[in-house]
Length: 116
Length: 113
Image (cartoon, rainbow over all chains, first blue to last red; front, top):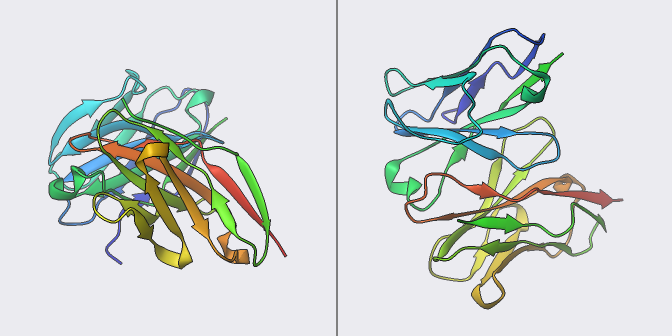
C-alpha cells in the first residue's frame, strides 16, 4: 500500500510529557500537511511543508508544537509539555503541488493522542 | 476566507432510504468542494470532489453531490442507504492557491436496520 502512513496510531501520555508523531507521505508528493481534529469537530489546519520548507503555520500551532520535514520526505510533529487540551486526533495529508492548488489532499489514518 | 456549514450534526435514516447531508459554503472566489467520510478511529477518505466542470459529481459507494452556486450549497446524497454507510461525513472547501482545506463540523450518519 502506498498511501499516507502515520505512527503511532495511538498515544497515551501524562500531562507535561513530550510526544512525537511521524508521518510518511505518498512517495512522490512534495506537499505535506498536518491537521488537528478534536472530538466532535472537523479537522483544523496546523501547518504545511513544500519539500523541506515549512511555508505556513496556523495560529493554532502554539510554541509547544514543532514540525519538521528534514529531507523533504517524512515529517515529525512534536508536542512539548503536553496539556489535556492537546488530546485530539492528529491527521497528516500529502499532495502534489499540481494537485494542491485545487485543494486535493490524501489523508493518513491519524494518530490519536490522549493526555491524562 | 472560506468556511463551511453542515446543517445537522446527526442524521438518522432507515436502511434503503434516501440519504441527504447538507453543506453550505462561503467563499468570495470560485470554490473547490469536497466530501470526506470518516469511520471510527480512522482517517479521512475522499468520497467525491468538485473542482470545475460538471456540477453533478459522482463519487464512491453510490454517493453524489451537486454544486449549486446560486444556493452556495454542495449537498451529499445517496438514493438508498446501506448499513455500511454509517460514519461521520465532512464537507470541506478550498480555493485556488489556498494551502489548506476548511472543514465543516461534520454530520454523523446513523443507518437504522
